[in-house]
Image (cartoon, rainbow, N blue to C red; front, side):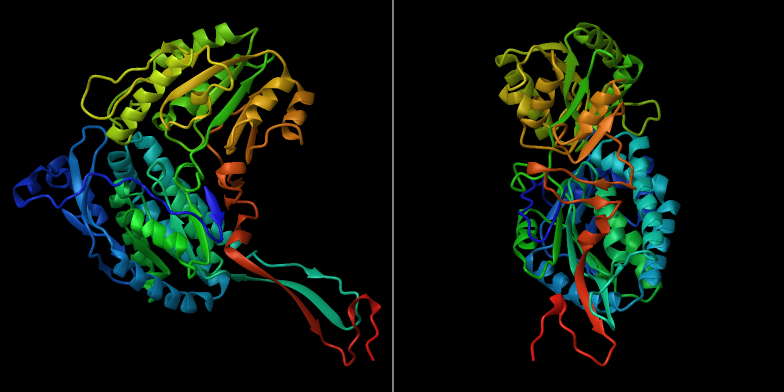
Length: 521
C-alpha cells in the first residue's frame, strides 16, 4: 500500500482480452444456471467498465476468468483515455458538491453504503471467490472489512478536527483546520479487490473527497459490482454519482492517474517492481526457543498459506532458533499435508488456486531458483494435476538469510525457513530487505518483546508479537516502510492523509500584537 501526493503508474498485466463471439456467449459462466446469482449484482455478459454518474466505456473488451477452472466468467468494456479525461472532470465537479456537505451527513451516506454492502455480502463474497480465487470465507471476510470500515468512518465523521492551541498573543485564537484534499485516486491489486478500495474510499469520503478507482483488470467484475452498489446509494440520495467514479483499464489508465496533477492524492497497491516497487512485501516471522509452539504452527500456516500466499502480509521468511528448527519444520510439514485443497467456494476448502497462469509460472521459477541457490524443498514445489491454477503449498529450508530468492517477492505460497542463533543477528536479518510491511515475533521474553518493538527492533510498519503477520484490524493504521511506501490507510489517524491542514490565527481583539514579542512601529 502507498498513500502519497504523487505515485508511480500501475503497469498491471492485462488478462486475456477480446470480446467473446456470439457463439461463445453460452460458455460464459454467467450464462450457466449454477452462476445465475451473478445477475443479483447487476452483472451481464458484457459490462460497462466506466462510471462517472453514468455507465459507459469505449476501450478494449476484456474477459475475466475463474482461477479455479480457467473458464470465462463475463467481460468488461474498459475505459480509454477519453473516458478517463471525462471522468476526472466529472469527479472534480462532483467534489464541489460533496465538500460542501457537513461531515456527519457525509458519514450518513457512508453508513448507507455499508448497509447496502451488508445486504449483498454473501453474493459479493462469492464473486470475489469466483474471480480472484480466494476461498469463500475469505471473500465474504473481505466484504465484511469494507462494511467494518464504513462503520468506523461513520463515527469518525463526527470526530475529525484540529485542536484549539494556546496563542501567545492576547485576544487571539490559534486553531487547526482540516479540509479535504480534493480528488483521491485509488489503484488496487487483484488480491484484495474489495477491501483496499473500501478502506480508502470510506475514509476519503467522510473527509470530503471524491474518489476515482482503477481496479485490477483481472478482477474487473468485482470493481463493477461494488461500484453499482455505491452508485445506487449516491443516486438514491440525489448526489452526483461521480463522487465515487470508476475507470476499469490497464497500464494506460494507471499511468494517466500517476501523472495527473489533478489527482490530489493517489493510493497505490501493487508490486514493488511496478510502483517504484511499492507494495508486494517480503514479510518475516521470528520464532525463539521459548516460543509457544501451539501458537507458532497454526500462525505460520495461516500466514504462509492463507489466500494461497497472495496477501500483502503473507509470511515469506520464517526464522527459527537453531534449537527448535527441526522440530518446528517437521510439525509445519505435517500441518501442510493436512491443508484441504479444493474449489474456493466449497466451505471445506482452506486453500484455493493462484490467480493466473502467470502466477503459476512465477511459482515454479521461484522453486527452481531456491534449489539452485542451495535450498531443499521439504514439501510442495509442484503444480497440482487438476483444472485451474493450483500449486502445492511449499516449504524450503537450507538457504542462507541473504540468498537472492529469499529477498525476492514471488506472491506465491512459498515459505523460506531460515535458522538463526542470536537475537541481534536475526533482528538485523529482518531489516536487511528493502521491503517492510509486516513482521511478527514469537517469544515469552518480555525484554525481547520490547526490544523488538523498539528503535533497534523491526523496521516494518506492522510489528506483531505472538500473532501472524496477516489479519490486520481496521482500527490500526495499515501500511509499511522503506520500499513498501510509508503511507498509512484505514484506522488510527490515517484520515489525516486524506485532508490538508491549515494553522489559523484569528484576531478577535482591537490590537495588533506580533508573535515573538516583535515591535514593528
